[in-house]
Structures are given as structure tokens and as C-alpha cells.
Length: 405
Image 1: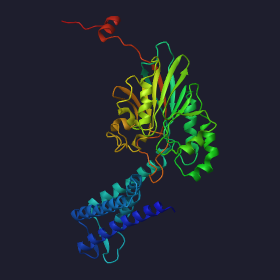
Image 2: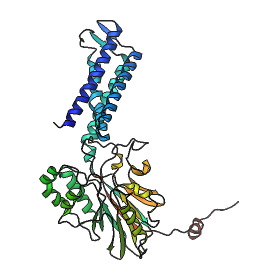
Image 3: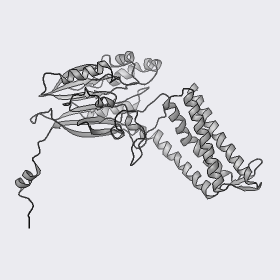
Image 4: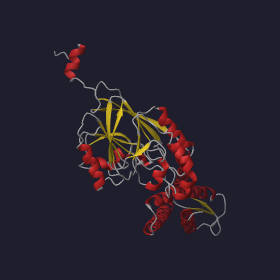
């Protein structure tokens, strides 16, 4: 058991103890020793007091240095384990004698609360053990000005946030899905491996074998992400056809189409990143498709971003990993608007921005969880921008128009 696993266990036991102690006191306060009935007001008061104590404990963990993802993990275990455990105790307390109190009846409010807490069990099982592995292929067609009308569309496969500790069938399937699309170009917006150096050494052969499968006529391009360590990343792509392009502007060709790709370092506000964008804006040949490959989508907001960029491809947010229907992700940890960070194709500052929801999940101290936000391999088709005639001309051409009376 790791030290953090010990923190998680202690947190769960503490929270269960708090709820049990306060509910026991509420039942004892009810007075009857045979079958104590806790009123709805007392039940809700006790529940709020318990939640308040748990919140204070969480703040204390934050003060002691537990990372944000660790705090999310603690909260998730309260939802997935602590709440259902308390629900079970509420249900059985009516039929088993509690020392010093007897049997406890929590009434309709307690029963409804317990039922709702029990429903969290299948939701959390789905979010932890099914959806993180329910890999989807996301397709988007994007019309770009930089592609001449006579040129064929360009297929781009995006593999963002693989973020594995060891190579499994999930990562192999992601690579296979990307290659099955027969892409012209493959873009990897960082966060490839998230594990210890020891784990990397143990997995190095499997990692190299996995990444060596990636090839495309127009090239395979990679930039660094938050969890990437450059020495390990360089070893991972050694011998493969993947090109690391942090801080570079490179030229590629797919058939008759010219593509310029700017690779932005993880610190997109740095002088090196801004200089890369300036190089892109100052390129001599503008008869190309201009792409920006970056880990964090916030680069879109920089004033140095050229106006004629056809597409910005990013990862980082994982789509929030948790999305609430009708609302979206509660957090995305990104400077872009929440609906952009939620993933997919967006128009931001008159530029096409594609944020991949990623292949993997945040690891380390974070819980493995996805909810209404499945992992994805993205297949983007860049097509020539179609000139559309004004509506009145279209009506005239088809012989259909309005008739005034």
C-alpha cells in the first residue's frame, strides 16, 4: 500500500465514523430505547453536520499539501464507498439493535436518502470500470481555406493523452483505430506516458513496439504534454517514425497539398512558444494548410496566433472526464471557455479548434473515472472550403422563389 492509499483508507474510515457517530447521537437524542425514531429535521441536521465535518477534513488535507487530483479522489470515494456504506447502515439499523440505543428508524427522508445513495454504486462502477475503456472513434469534417478546391481531402488522426502506465489492449486498440483510418498525417498532442521511471524501464520494449506502428505519408508529429518527461519521451519514440516538434515549424506534403505545422511547447506562454507562432505567421508561402499542434488549448487565446491558421489541435482537458448532461464538464483546467474544453470541434476567435477528449485518464493520485465523456481516437478530414452562392442566387438557380401577393 502506498502512502496515498493509506490517506484514502484513513479518509474513508474517518468519514464513516463521523456519520455513524452523529447518527447514533441523533438516535440517542430521540429518547426511546426500544425503537428510536429520528425526525426528518433531526436527520437532515445530522446529515448537514456530517457533511460539514467531512468538508473541514478535506480542507485540512489541502492545507497539508494533497494535490487537487488527490482531493478529487477523496471526494469520489466518499460518493462511491462512504455514502453507500452509510445507506446500508441506515437500512439495517431498523432491524438490528444498536448498543445503548436499540433499533433506529430514520423515516421516509432517511429511506429516500439511503436509496439515492445506493444508486451511486452502479453509477460509480460504470464510471470507473466501463466508460474509461469504452473507446470511441470521433469523426469531423472541417472545411479549410488553405486547401485548394482541386486538391483531395486530408485525413488526420489525433491520438491525445494516451497517458498510460503500462501498455494494455486499450492502448493497442487506440493505435489500431487510428491506423485503420489510413491517415495522411498523425498528430499526438502530448501526454504519452504517465508513470515512474522504473515502470518505463519495465515497459520500454512494449512502448517502443506500440509507437513504432504509427506511420503516415505526411508524417507523425508529437509535442510534449504535462506528464511527459523529455528524456523518457525521446527514448519512447526512438526508432519510430514520430517526429518531436516542440518549438518548430515544419513543412509536410500530402499529394498536391502543402501543410505547415507549428509545434507548441507545453508552456505555451513562453518566449519559445510565442516565437514559434511568429515564425508561422511570417512564413513566405501562404498557399498551404496551416496547423498548430499543442497540448494545452489555451494557446488559442494568444495575440501571436496567426489569423490564417486553419486548425488548432489540442488535448489536455480529457473533456473534463466527467460531463453532466445539459451542463457539460464541471472543470477542464484550461484557459479556454468550458464548452471548448469539453472537447470536439469549436470555433474560437474565428479559428477552428479541435480539443480531443483523449485516449486515457488522469493517473497518479486521480481516480480512474469517466462519465458521459468516453475516450476517443479522433479522425479529422480537412476538405476544401466550398464557396456557397448567396441565398437569392440559389433560389434563382433552382427556380424557387417567393411570390408576393
